Figure (cartoon, rainbow, N blue to C red):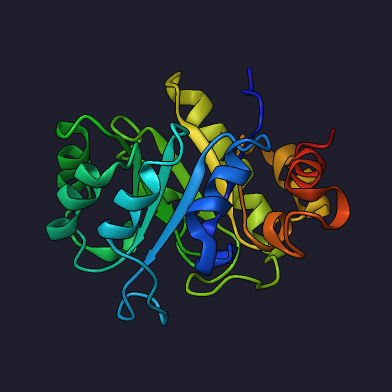
Length: 223
């Protein structure tokens, strides 16, 4: 049975001048997880934040920190993010040759281990690591920047991975990130996603517009 849909607002779209307050606001507005996009300007064409920022905002909420590492090499930085307060650490299938070892390392630190797939990476590439992952993250845009348009062709991949997960019988979250709004949310939930990352759709317009953060989170759930 599919889990209730979790909403993970991406702080990439928050107001960084008041980041702590923004995180606290979404946490009290119904967010299930706090999604933290880490980019290195190498694996993806953008640079965002490091462990020090994660540690700083850890103080304002007990919500799970869903940390998405879009960096390569990734292994040297995993422990720093774990110590800074990450609860889920997701690495890219494409970011290194020894993904199984990386996932084992994450789990050895007591964290949930996730694997992410770029739009051009097939679902089959993770078939031999579903015995160890706790989360699969399907990118429905090319990673690097917020505010991009949803890639429709990824819906069939989400459905394929949903079937793969169900066949394992394991408790694995299926998360989707990129171009998520009230309309695309319906499509990916129907395909089998049970966790949605949304940046612009939650933070866009600030805390007051269109029902505020709580109203926009409810819209994504289809409430």
